[in-house]
Length: 308
Image (tube, rainbow, N blue to C red):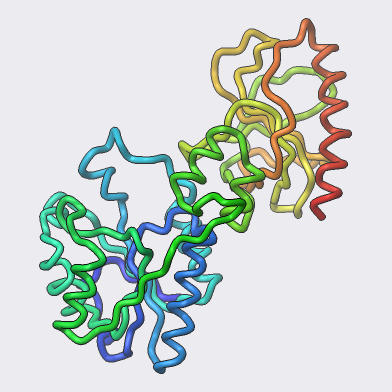
């Protein structure tokens, strides 16, 4: 997949019969996947190329930073997932205050049509665009008729009677409902980061402390996880919390990797959340905590065995 930073840098894409979709695609969830697969299918049918048009940073980061939602996926994660589905071009527009002032008509005609010249645009039914998000699906269809490109609208999909949307998935993750979020995403929620030194407590379970790079952290508690390390993939347990047993104050992300004793300080690891098994709890002493952790590990081994 070719990543193009800014639509002004486009050269020959207009000549390649592009089929395009537009949006933020945070999480690249099952609803997004359905749209992207349709873009790929249509591009192949007309001998064209498949294109995703998105923004960075998120428009709210520029317009109303206090309202910007936490990201399910970083741009790098999002690009990787989009590429794995088979999209050929990813256009990442730099979103600025001046760009935000473009009217919906100006955005469609001067940016999308003149710079990309799509043969077809495929979007979700609730997509909006342009200044104040005033651009509607109806305007897109009307402009398509004027300029000669087709518009295809994809309806919501539901899983367990829940509409698959990024906002819903963010809420589920924040509430610790990572197993339900996985069903809507089609993959486990992932936290990535470097292993850093934390407070060493001798309770018989060594932990890798993660310096996280995302704002979207699952609810406090203990989770069954898979961990990708430079040495392979392992089962594990993660505790998100402030360590109340030791009167902690700062939020920590502590990972216990099963059957693993290699030094990975400073190394990048990926943590995939499978299931929340209990909330955070204060124990009367380190021995009581160690006994609970032993029970947690045993339970998590059974949970992850079922997931294999």
